Image (cartoon, rainbow, N blue to C red; front, top):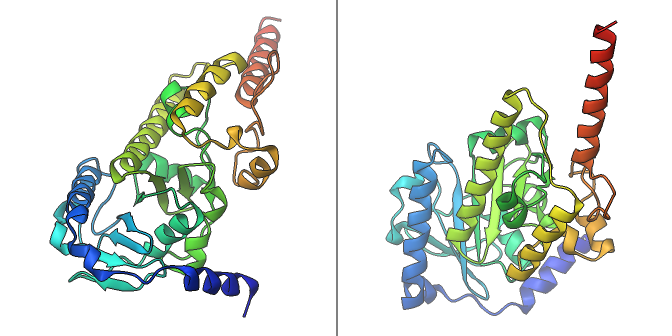
Length: 294
């Protein structure tokens, strides 16, 4: 048995026995309604198609509500949801639980404070996942405060244990990740908030694509701007690897983050990655203009 497997077995043995009756408990009713509402929002916004996407909410120490497989998120009903334990064993529900619940469960195990996970395929964000390119950052305050840098989890076959583990390194200091050649996953304290993060990421990716089409240099935040946004983020208790201790910052944002992403907040007077890129672009344009004028 590998060390990872042994560790997982030890953790599982320490969990309380799962309670299937939570599926019908009064406190589960509102959460079921919220999951269904989130599913419909995802479908209406074209973030899922066919039976794609999945949603879950943790309702106990070893109990998680989740969406069933092979069902459109528009057609979700409270009675049709499933209950599983943290090992993926189905405890209740008429339908079969989503095959990608393992991804959600790894997030819950890595960060017990997380209560909801949403996986979907919004077109502009998913385009970034196919190109294996993180979206630019330091351009809009809402994106910086609610999300910030977005890591890319490496590709693995969806529904497998390997796929589920790809996002684990990012869970503690992020709330959103691109899934290479697949889509996105977001996590939060409620399903509604996790869906919000999906909206913020998708709108930001779309907006940045439109901004580049204008053919003009893009303007990014400077160091003082970023410092103010990080203060807001810290006040609201939102995760960000830039607010983490340096050692954790390194392991959270390794090669999956764009090469120009600063490892820490830039000091006053120091150029961030996007600012440096803009400076290089401006200098190159000035040189070309001089050459054309000869």
